[in-house]
Length: 484
Length: 131
Image (tube, rainbow over all chains, first blue to last red; front, side, top):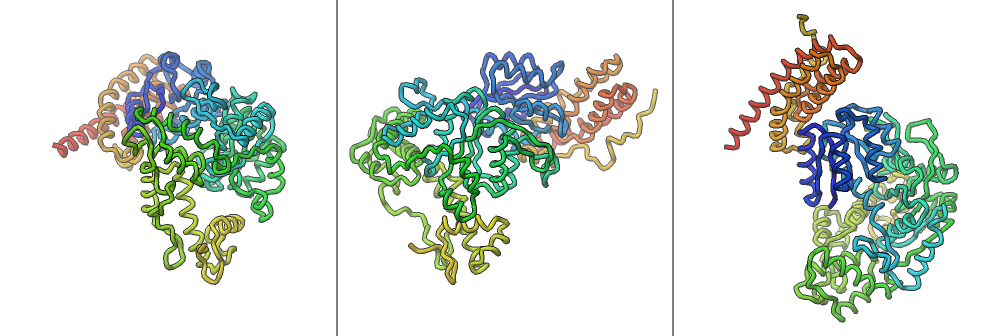
């Protein structure tokens, strides 16, 4: 979904882009223009979500055109296309707020990646988070649903701290709505007309995370063939959402701490100190206090993040929100999937859904509703349409460790199964599955020696310790997953 | 009439069409490559003619624009010799060196001919294979 405007006077580039993007996502609408003037006119009339702009259009200065696009709509993501490596203008453009740049001749994988990122950036900033049904007048808002006393506390906290320029730490289980809190804070803050950017610290390896946050200089490490502006610099004046802060390496923790204390940092491999003014919202599902004790998280950073904390309880601890959430997602899903004949949920199914433990919280609930709507053959959702785990049936997933005591390592089988279950958390699930096997296997090799294991894996000892605890790996004579 | 210089921009070991790199950039899509080649065959002669006209008229900014354009479309189809030559011309014009640029344009025209012939043959070959 989304509308992309491409401005380039080269027909083959236009063809390339149209071909690649429509292959990547049939729902994308692509609008083309062959000059700056035409591009600006099309932008005014068609309101694109992302603009791809050739930096050397005839008779137009790249930077001027960029500014004119931003006048049509502030924070419209503009991605430059440039044929000069390390083009000075492109870098300057980014320093002034262009979203990113692509080198020509275009590489389709990079093109698709950039467009996806830009669309996601757009979604985060644009889709409003409404705190009440009346606020959600347009059906495209993400409604923050809840009427339990616990959720009302969350809404009140958001209202209290949104406008203050303070760091907020959002704590809650995976899938409980931490991103929604972050976006709600942003939209109700004084920085609502500045950018909002999100980074998932668990999704990136350590060096890439540092570069993503702080940028890097050309040559800072292998593959760093041009200077890169990091999120903290790109989002100057705005708000940054750091998800899964517990997954930052010690080095990144140190840099983030300094940024919070001094509003300054250097890019990876650089000596230039850069000042930035960013409001930070952090989130975690990890027990940070335990991690401080274990030495894997800095106490001074926790102290800085902890000033204002918003807790979101897991769904099973606020069961009165379940019917509300079911209704909300049912409405959305039946419209999205065009199954308007579905009217509701049967009392038996509702009872089952209310007594389920929801380990994946609201995200899981959304996924379950979706699966049920897809399976539904009549106007009412009945127990038969609910997935096996909700019904309490044994799931045909071979999670039992093999005779060797090592966990399941069939990557392909696992992914296929989860795809069939329509998981919406597949990256994290697969990462966990991989890590379980990898850690267990390596620790077996080193006979439980964590230092050696950390050397083989190339990660910190703290992280190894962490995973042992998280996966309950037992370090008896034979290393294996604890049978409990 | 000055002879074309020995052009350092285009060296003997460079291919006329680096199909492998082009395919790699576009995810191995051979059909897409053919479409890009077709667009190149249609658009490049016009750009070359416009470049030559601008050089004759001594209009450096215009000539630079057309050289830039040729460089870009050649790059999309893996025409590395034309790309390199056009880049050289673009740089020369950017620093105001009209004469050397005009010299190089002779080489460029020759390289463009070779590229067009090669692409046409490539297209015919593939059309034959499909039939």
